[in-house]
Image (tube, rainbow, N blue to C red; front, top):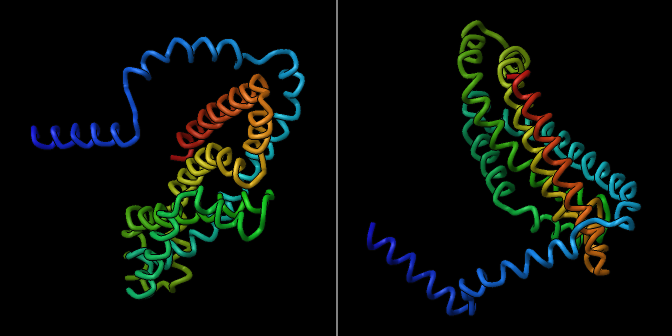
Length: 249
């Protein structure tokens, strides 16, 4: 452990030297940062007059996140059934499904946004696609694990009774797995609302694009109001999501 700690310290010093980073300078800058924050990032009357536009973009961002998550959930369920060890028709299809899920899940959402930005330009559709493909990779993996954990005994029982494959999916997989799958989708909606801000900066859509406009034009009070509104919405969505999870599970 001592050797590992020394190695981390060595890596830290090397990184600090290469990037010209000084920790004490950061601590010394804290009072100036706090002073600048309270001088420039408190919404004023002009910023508050823009609140209706900010709310409109927030609603657009929320709906985009919901649409991307629900659409990805539908496609993810199909691929999860094919990739689960419990329900997969054969090992080749299961391996292929898990490979697709692994590739999609390990590509960051910012990379998806840049890929579709090159293909479709700045638009809401580009933001939707970035959220969709990121959600798809995550949900496929989550759904596969859910099916394997919750539906294996039901599938085994129906298989022993001679049920057909569609009957097994409809009568065993869906009832046993759907509450947990809905819980994962609620979690993904929360994540996508947060991620949509970054995606909007790149794709020119939603609340992220509005923040970019205010920030680049040095309208810091309006940009601060965007951040405050986004944080408030995220906390509210999280509370509602946790409530729904408790009711479902």
